[in-house]
Length: 294
Image (cartoon, rainbow, N blue to C red; front, side, top):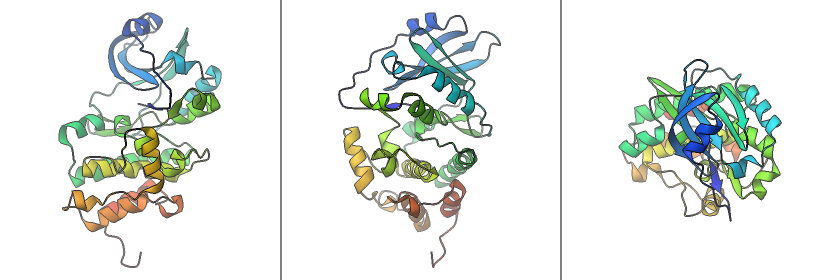
């Protein structure tokens, strides 16, 4: 689920499980802390009215104060209408005292981040299959004028045979509901390791090719075992995203076909105009050698 990068001077405040259990007890039985990031915590539990197993994302109180709550809930309501087999739906959002949260179904198959931790690198066929499903989700959402803005292994989860992309559009909801307050709080919405150069440089008007770049970072990591750009600080990663070429995939994994490296490199182009225009086009370039005159 969505995390924030740490900005200069930002010090997160711990959020206790008991605090969340008490605050949300009227609607949810919260039982386990699943993960935590710079902006929020994720808990598992059950919805009282129907017993459904859910995941609840709760923003840290010091971040929640930057959010215009009515605007955020309106954005979540809009995003909840996204309906695609490879998008984890948003069920609802709410607030209790200083806490703001939103709710998704709980998927039992774990995340891509967990799989990469176990396997380090994925077989090419598996990586392309996962990418195909994610690209289909992106193309659908882009057709609804919704960008993801935070594609990363933690936001790719498995439910049986299905690949699901979660937190769709939540970054947009936060930007629209908090705006400049996010910057002044020292937080960066998104994850520097997977940000396009234009997103890393602070450009406000992004298009679908920013998500294509992030997807290519994910493909690179699935195949190489590490992202194309890393660094000790978010600022160091931003600088590399903006200025450096990605290391050659076939240097770290010589068994890959040349056309796969070419496809990923093209999708990681610094200029959005040089990237594939759709997820489907990117997947096609991964599956087949590029024409000799392309």
